[in-house]
Image 1 (cartoon, helix red, strand yellow):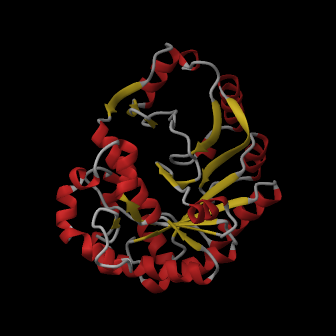
Image 2 (cartoon, one colour; image 1 turned 90 degrees about the vertical axis):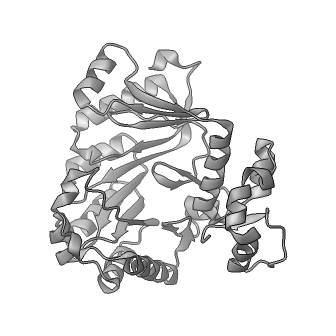
Length: 339
């Protein structure tokens, strides 16, 4: 792919994700980074992040991560309640998680994120808060609280989960708000829909300054207009659209070895798609959007572009009232996420 670039692009964020990247051999991870360095110019302040399953992490893995320049690690935790863990077939002790964090920080990888979930089988407000308390003791820089999406028709392995034990919408909402309240009381700031960060963390500062962005990995400080995905099923986000790689690993490997782009499909965005993408991003990051400002950047009038949506909001007055703004204000100016 590198011969298709005009020059040598600058890489500002490198994210190892999808499953468990540390299942790769250390030698393979080093080789991949060497190849990337030949194709991209690594920015001096590049963030290299990786997703980790604490249950399988070894000291040799950590040594490799430090060697390839990892600066941030996201630990999958989900829940630390034994009953929930048995139901989702992911038994992970508190000790394993604590040990993984200690190894990472000892190796110089100081920035640690913790990924939690709500809405899992047998989860309650009480055991969600207990898991959050364990997470806070790890002193992570960021915490993500994602909602579990039960889609067994798309992900067959989910059929093994006890559906009768899944909490309903109101309970899921209560779990999330309880987790959010506990994190805020511990000094974290709410970032976008489902992230929390220390106020001095780059994500927390981006939220405060209005610079927060959202991509496939969640909330981010990355302002780049292009995200390139490598690996089977990966999705690239480009200014003009999206492209997904082949999902079959063997087919993906064959395409790469033959020097072909391993692209399975793509989507070209229309001007309206790009406008709505920007509106959605602001809602997910700020929980509010200045429709006039976004529409001005796209050269359209907010009242015309979102006539149907604004009518659904009853002229916008209820949306304004819900966020504390005067109900008599311009209905085109702001739409709150709650509406």
